[in-house]
Length: 530
Image (cartoon, rainbow, N blue to C red):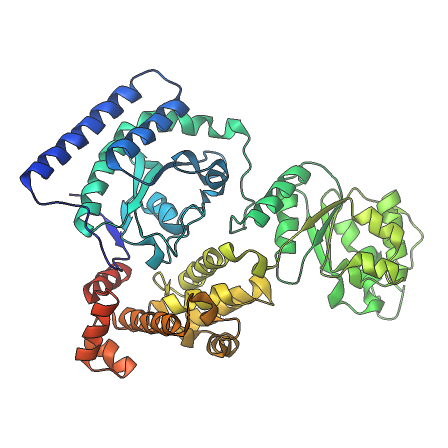
C-alpha cells in the first residue's frame, strides 16, 4: 500500500481503462516490457543525462504520456529544477524551478508522498510553471512521485496525459514509484553534478518564473559579484528592496552591513544628516555625534530607495561621494573615506527629471551604470497565482492554519485585476483574507477587499473578460463557476450548495448533470484539505 495524498478530484473524468481480460493482459505485458527496457537503459553505461532522457522516452512510448520530467534538488542552493524532460522545450524546462512546498512538485519533494491531480485546470496548487499546458483548452491529469535515496528525497518524477479516472491514476502512481526506484542511481549522479553546471538560480525571496522575471534574475546574477553601482527601476511594491538585498547577498560583501534608507520618508532638513551623519552641535537638537548611513555601510552595501526624491543640494554631495568615496559629517571638518557598494532605486522617470532640471545629469549617469527594471505585477500575470499561494501559506502558518485554497472565482479575479499596488498590495490582500476566513479552508470573493469585490461585479475589465463567446456562453460560464464555488463551500453537500444558490436539490442535480460535475469529487477534495 502507498501512503498517498490525492489532490483535486474534480471535473468530468474520461476513463482510460478497459475491463476486458484481453486488455488487462496486454496492459500488464506492456508495463512489464517498460520495466525491462528501463532496466536495460539504466545498465547500458550511458552518460546519466542520456540515460534519464532515454528513460523518459521509453515512458512516453509505453505509457502514451503527453509530457514527463525529472526534477532534482540542488545540493548547494536547495532549489528544485527540471534536469531531464520529454515533451518540453528548452525554455519550458528553464521555467521549471520550485521551492520545497511550492506547487504539486514542491509538495511531493517536501512531504515525500506521491500525489496525483485528476484535472490540473481545477487545482490551484498546480502552478503550470513551465507554461507548457494550455489550461483553458487541454484536459490533463498529472501524477508526481518522489525519487528517494533511503529516507532522503532527492527529486521527483512526474508525467501528464489526457484526463484519467482515479483508478487509472492510482495504478500509474504505483508504476511510477517503481520506475523512480529504477532511476535512483542515475538521478543521484545527476544531482551531485548539478551545481557544477553553473546554472542560474532564482534569488532568495523571489517567487515566480515569468519571462520578465527570468531577465531580472539573470541580471542580478550577472551584477552581484562585482561592485558596480546598480539602479533599480520600478513602481512601488514591485520588490526593489528585495532585489537590492539579493544583489548584496550574492556578492562578496554578503557578510558585511546592508544599510537602507528611503529618501522619500524624510523631511529635506534631515536627509543629509541621515545620509552623512552630523557632529555634536551641528544644528539645534544635535546633542551628540551621529554616524550617517554611509559610515554604517562601510565595507558593505548602501541602498538608497526613492533616490529621485533627493533635494538638488544633497544630490551634489552624493555625487562627490560616488566620485571620491569620501565626505564630511554635517558640522565636521574631518574627511571620512568609505568603501561602499551603491544600489539605488526609484519609481520616477529620472531621465525626464533630468530634462526638467529636477535631477542632476551627472549624478544620473553615475547611478545608472547597471539598470534593472522590476516589472509591475500586471505585466507578469503568470506569477500572480504562485505569489498568492505563497502569501496564503505564509499567513496561514503564522496563524496556525492548515493550507488554504483559492476558489475558482477568486483565481479569475486575482488574475484579471490590475494590481496598482503590485506585490505589496497582493500580500496585504492575502493577509486580510486569512484573517477573515474563520475556520474555512477555501477563499471566496467575499473574503477579498471591497475594491476587488467591486471590480469583480463591475464587468468592465474583470471576470467577464475571462469568458469567451457570446452572452449565452458567458452566462453558462458564470453559472458553472457559481455552482463550483457553492460545492467547494459546502464540501460537496448538494442540499447546502443548492440553498446557497437559491435552488431546489432537483434543479441543482440537473445543473450538475449539465456541467458534468460530480458532488463526490468535492467531498474527496475536502477530505484531503482537512
